[in-house]
Length: 101
Image (cartoon, rainbow, N blue to C red; front, side, top):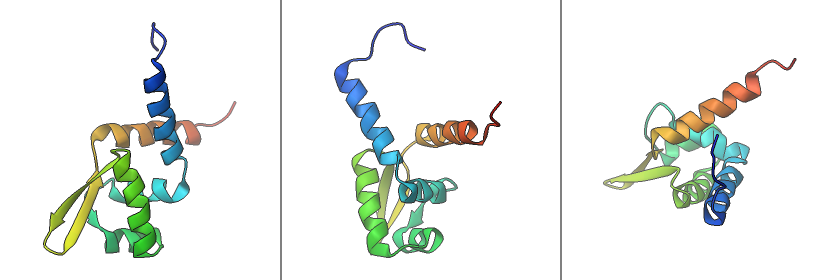
């Protein structure tokens, strides 16, 4: 993987990212956003939780740069911040679904 040890700040940032991704609701939100941007009400409907609960989770995801907002009039639309996030989820999914020997 890597030849030199990770810097302490990098280790903390990685651990924080995985900590945020460790919540099933946040994983479901990111999965809902994988095809493209959605407003809070659509995310709430897809994930099956209240709009206020979605907003709370989106604040955490936004703080970790996992999602980004776009305002359009009264609505705010959210999208996965970049392709790295989706690739990370795909890799984890491949690991989880891999048959055990």
